[in-house]
Amino acid sequence: KVEVLEVFMYSCPHCYHLEPDIHAWLERMPDNVEFRRMPAVFGPKVEPHARAFYATELMGVQDKFHLPLFRALHEQKRAIWDEDALVAFAEEQGIDGAEFRKAFNSFFVNMKVRRATEMVQRLGVESVPSMIVNGKYRTGPSQTGGRENLVKVIDHLIGIESGAVAADRASPVPASGS
Image 1 (cartoon, rainbow, N blue to C red):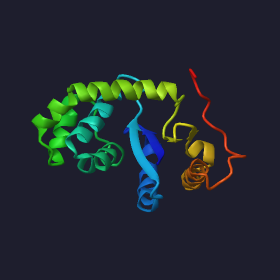
Image 2 (cartoon, rainbow, N blue to C red):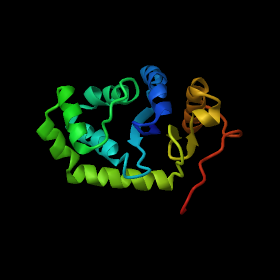
Image 3 (cartoon, one colour):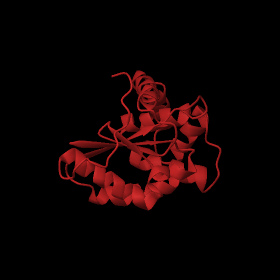
Image 4 (tube, rainbow, N blue to C red):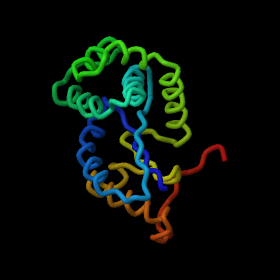
């Protein structure tokens, strides 16, 4: 399997605008691809969003939460930044608030947020959205000339990693610490 990792932040307008392109790509992505998302934690203000992402993952309700949170922040301009606001928002989406809060503060979520913070640094992610293909290639709309080209580049990198495309013009993410 070839892993495609989207590094994003709920507060990022570029990440929000990329969602329809990602959704369309997910419907046609190759069978040999595993897609994952990882929230970037660039500071304490966005950590609650990362915690909410992993809490909904733990609860198996990301489909009820992910896009609605993006919409609430970017379309409705709602201030959903702290634990209490996120619990209330989860409840609005039909998610049990007490269970969400329990997951939000769980060891699992603490571990996932810590790991995401470390991974962002290790992968050299300085902006979002960023797409990491197989831990080797880092790209994003700013490197590809826009969202439309991003999907083409991702497909090309998947081809390289699958052995279907020559790697002569691809540039790997610089390996750090290896």
